[in-house]
Image 1 (spheres, one colour):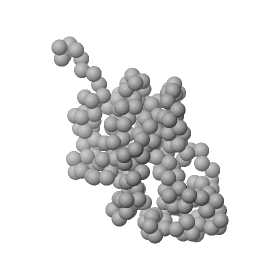
Image 2 (tube, helix red, strand yellow):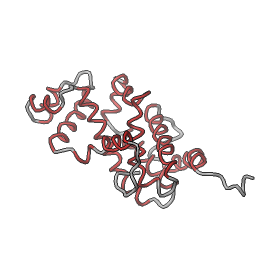
Image 3 (cartoon, helix red, strand yellow):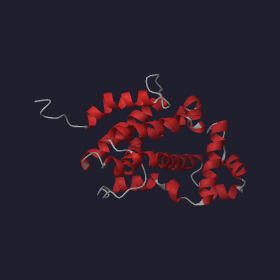
Image 4 (cartoon, one colour):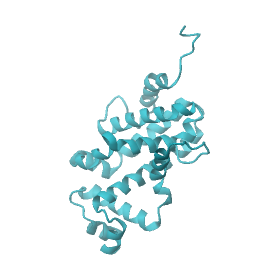
Length: 220
């Protein structure tokens, strides 16, 4: 499920804005990339509470003024932009496998495997989930989850629309996103990012039946 593609964009302005929001990683300039990367390293090392914008400046090798101009909203803004970058990077990492998928099952397996692996191995995210969950969970809970769901749906649209009707793309993308977040925040031995068989079993047993209509001849 990925960034590239030529699907007709949806009419929903909020969904389009969310897709653009998530593509920030691709369009960011070198300075923003450098600062966000430095911030991610600092958070992975010390956590968000103990990381200051001065720390980010030292890590990036720039002046304090440069960081404060780039993130006038402070650490909250740095975290917000960092989430945008990491979401874009995740989709870019999945792009080649998603483009190569020839069935909906293969597409879902590839997307889930890449996402779970990237998130489970993300040092900063895992530090926050373990030590400062209050810093990250509000960004993916309740009404603030909406932009994330919308972004994933629009970035997934070029690939999901190869296998699903247009009006079913967003519900399908939201279902997969909620599932990935659930396994990221509360890992299960039943689903392992490095165990392709466990992911395929999940997709075949639960996701495909939810996304595909039964054959009326088989189910009169």
